[in-house]
Figure 1 (tube, rainbow, N blue to C red):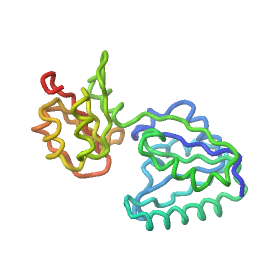
Figure 2: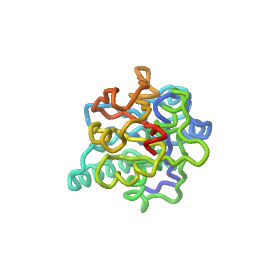
Figure 3: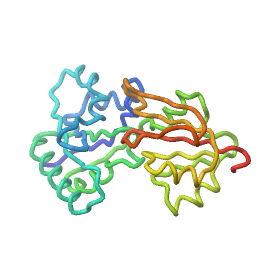
Figure 4: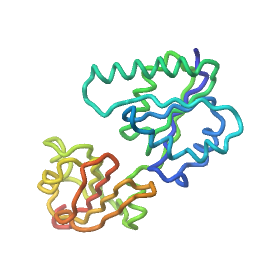
Length: 233
């Protein structure tokens, strides 16, 4: 099997209306869509986002939902990546174009480029379509700018020793899937916080308040934005 073109498409944070026009056009044209999910028991959230658009299609479409578990176990990951490759190649026979969909943007902590690595020998051309990030959506809903003037914004996937220096030199901090809120509070100090939970989905929740007062749930689709106070910068 040889794919003429592979698209990496960011479908945004979950709201179908935040899909770009280019993403919509391509998703209506491709022969196959690959939508990763975190376990056998869960649906792909990226696929859920584009469900309405897929129903509008008139031509035949093949959809594959390979499992990419949330784990740092390299051996386990490699096993699932091999399974994904086999499943896509088997089900995609005869397909010329394929789209790999991901929440947010493909360049931001996405599995797209890892997917491309294991498929690049079977692909002639690649194109990446950017998408709206969860933190952009949070900022917009809260009506609070991420940065103004010469302010510095830092994105932190995990609060640890490495992130301390970044925190000290930043005006706005974005924590993706924050797990250790007490460590974050210790590093950042006081600040105005925007907490987004499942932003873009029907049951989204947005909480605004001081960092030391809000409760941060330990779940997947959580984004925490902290605007440091002037004296904390």
